Length: 438
Image 1: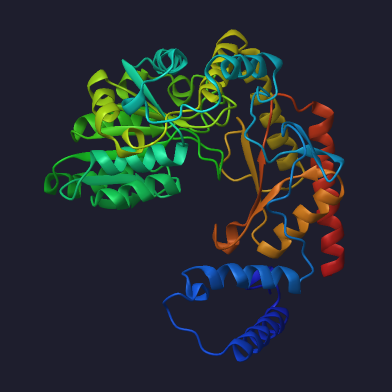
Image 2 (image 1 turned 90 degrees about the vertical axis):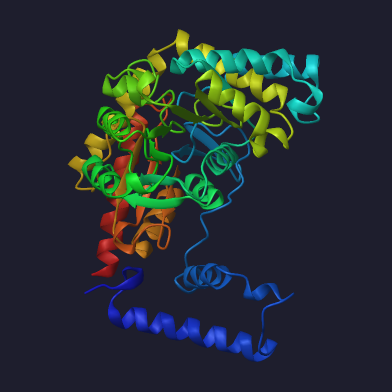
């Protein structure tokens, strides 16, 4: 019987004893510590060190922060070696596309690299307005505003729009940026069961009348599980309970829908039913930053009052140009979306046929392989890496121990033989590890 870390009770007890002795030795050599200027007492530090120590004790190499020596797409170069790469959000292969690079280089020649100050304080560049107009048209919205960071977009927009008398209702698996924005706002925050619109309805029926404004926040494509919501159900909830609906399209743009227009196209609903579309420029659009597409009135408020826009430097012109060109290619070449979705569907089908648990993945761009043990997951990732496949493990405490997984981000540039080879590599690694454990 296995317990924490995916080890037997005896092995786990032995590991914890070794880690405990290591910590006791460290504390004995440094003496007692107390909060203040001593950074060793920072929240979370001991958890980080425990995971690191556990990895070292188990002989597992740290899989994080590996330097990639070129463009990270379907392939990547790490330590001079070519790897099949499944740890990049370069869904359509546009990061590295010569047309995107040329657009960024032309923007550097014309505008320099930095916007140099906030757009409100010192003006903006024509490429900012062009990108925002294109994104607004993409979502069928009246306006759009770009920010320098996707994470900061959610934090500053939610933090600014909601207050202490308001309610924020969000999916249990919502991104950290939404949770941080809700915390900043001071609004009451309630999480509902993942993708469960009926649970959201119950919360609204119970709590809506007690608050001023209400905001429902969901994602179009959940990066941990690769599934998506029933958007039409949430639009209906928002209308019936007089709530704003915000959809985070970070992993949806260019991935969901026949032409990559996101979860509204995937679900066959009118995008006008969503009040606030949020997205990032760093994935399909191969740049960096975030944006909000919404009504002109809301965009006007954010443009003049959102702290993360007003008091931040504007989006770098080369990044805006790269995102604008990527969006134009997405619109002109929908075959990229079809190829991505075909690759993800193939990977999911082969993985399931090999006996792997792919959870609730829709097979559109993200497919997890859920292994249920952090140690097994880390060992599988290490074995895959040794065989030339780069995939990141998602371990406890990021997910519950029973949900530890390898998370595969597919690309339109992966080939069928490469996908077949990857699943075969995983199957062989699983069999070898099972033999050792036996």
